[in-house]
Structures are given as C-alpha cells and as structure tokens.
Length: 297
Image (tube, rainbow, N blue to C red; front, side, top):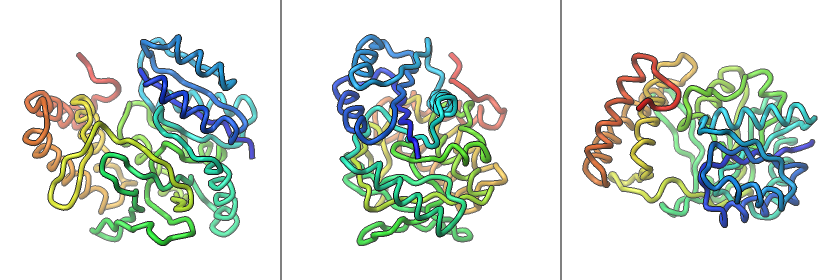
C-alpha cells in the first residue's frame, strides 16, 4: 500500500496548516498540497517544501472536488495505490494512518468491496463525536461509536482523513466537480454505495476537526455555522442530491427537512440573516434549474 496524502488549501491559517502537514509527514509515502488560489500561496509553498510535499497551485478557487481530483490524478500518475484526503485544519495523531490502513485491509478481506475508511472525528465546536449514519426505510439511523472497537459501516463518511483505494475510484468515478463544495463526499459515498461498496468509520482512529465557526442549537440537535455563501452551496447541493436515484429514501427526506431547518435557523439565529436568506433562495432556484459550479456574481 502506497499512500499519497492530498491536502486541499484555500487561504489557510498557515500555522495550523504547518501542524497538519507535520502530523502526517512520517505516516504516509508522499504529500500533495493542492491550493485553490490562496492569497498566501508563498507561505503555503514554504510550508509544503519543509515536509517535502508536491504543490499544485490553481490560479483561482476551483472547488474542493476539482482539487481532490487533481490530487488523485497525481497519485495515479506517480504509482500510489491509495489517497488520504485532508482538509487544511485536520490534525492526525501519530499512528492514525497505519490504523486506517490496517483496518481497511481487514475489511477488504472480510467484506470485499470497501469504498473508504475514515476516522471518528471529534468536532471541537459542538464537542461531539461523529456518528455512523444508515438509511433504514424512511428512518435515518444515527449510530453512536462509543464503546465500539471495530469499524462501523456508514452510508457516508467525511472526506477529511478518509483513506480511499485508487482502484475504487476507477470503478466508482471521481468527485463531482460541479457541486464545488459541500456534500461532495456524501454524493461520492452514495454513488459508491449504489455500486456495491461500503464505507466505514474506525472508532479507534480519532482526530479533532472543526466544522464552520461555531454551532447553533435546534431542539436537541446542533448545526454548524458557516459563512453565508456556504448556505447557498449546501441547500443547492442537498436538494439536487435528494432527487438522485442512488440517494436512499431516508437521506432524501433528511436533505429536504434539513434545508427547511437551515431556512429557519440561519435567518433567525445567526448573523447576516437577510444575505443568508437571499443565498439560500438562490440555492433552491439554481438546484432546480441545473445551475452548478461556483456561484455566479
């Protein structure tokens, strides 16, 4: 197994990025930093050089899916067998990659078709550990990872920290670039699921992760607060994904209800309420007229 870590950057906190790359440098066989038009590209290049990483620099923000696909193409060209996807703020503890690789090998031996395996991340803002999610008819089951030792199957896993065989990408296809950002990883997992591949979360591989800049609470649940434009992408992509034939029924209902919850929460509980409403309205329209890619001025 030869693993290339693919870290996507966009105007990152360079101090944090240095810690991210340092955390994986000794755990993998190579690193590629794919930058999406950052204003601090010179600093990013210096940090990448310090850990011997290759750098692919885009002149503009092409979106996370396109950047990940560029890293995958590089991995394929250079003879790697797997990619480890990383956000610019995900720090992996020592031994996490080895744990994921070992668990993946066991799963492939016992279950056959495995699309990806990812860590059980701890979300710093909500102070909650991720769960596994599985569609069961009309219900979406949320499965706790507490007291679990073995990997748990999940309909989707977060991209950051996930280990994916290139052979699976050859069969399933790469990430859908016109989604740009938000739910890119979920869409790919659903496509892989429809092709017979299962994704897993490894409870033994725990990492810290930040979703947005904070959370707001709706009843017993919390939703992450992102910049207003991310509300546009999430609603647009969620309503598109709810209409796809490979999306399980429970997830279709989830995306619709979550979009309604976003309309309520983001226009009453957080800042820039009017702008968020306008952007989500555009997201709904663009989803149904088929306007994707980067948001237009």
